[in-house]
Length: 109
Image (cartoon, rainbow, N blue to C red; front, side, top):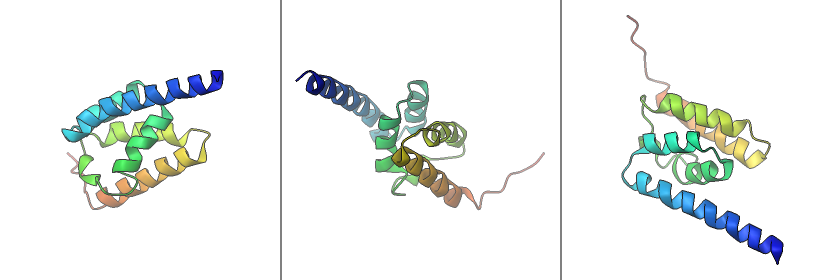
């Protein structure tokens, strides 16, 4: 019973964090989502957000050149995790970003 209570508390906290981020996703403010995920990094929450946005390539429109560096920092944290599923999602997201931005040419001054 004690373990069940801890599990439920952890799941409720995770759900609360996801609901907070959902508000920003609905506003299409992915930069704020990235900042919040970077500030309070939790691999499970990050993984959940990626699985509904970037990993399945359905919301690549959320990533732009302005938020890409912060997003890559977040993905670096995720691929450094010990769980294979988090590493996979991080690498899959990096691959999708590469495909989305491979045609972008930098202007050198």
